[in-house]
Length: 72
Image (cartoon, rainbow, N blue to C red; front, side, top):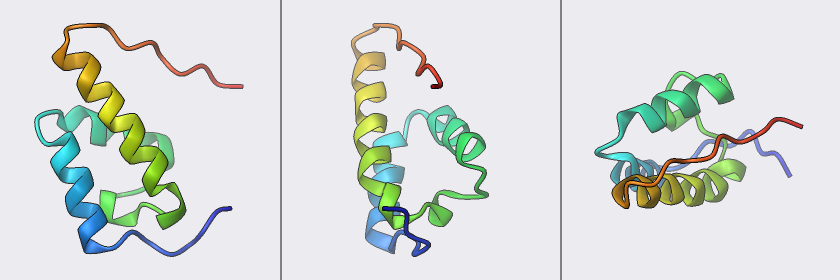
């Protein structure tokens, strides 16, 4: 369910920590979601974004390429 409530400060800090060394992840996310900053992320999307970001970071740290997400 989509929420118009934005993430809180703690959630924002968690995302910034996850994406810390990879600012391009945040830039891509902002573009794809049509938002201006991570603070604008809908709370309902937080968990999905955090988990996907962790996956991307782990793959990069292992030196494995990330498969692009195919649009339906």
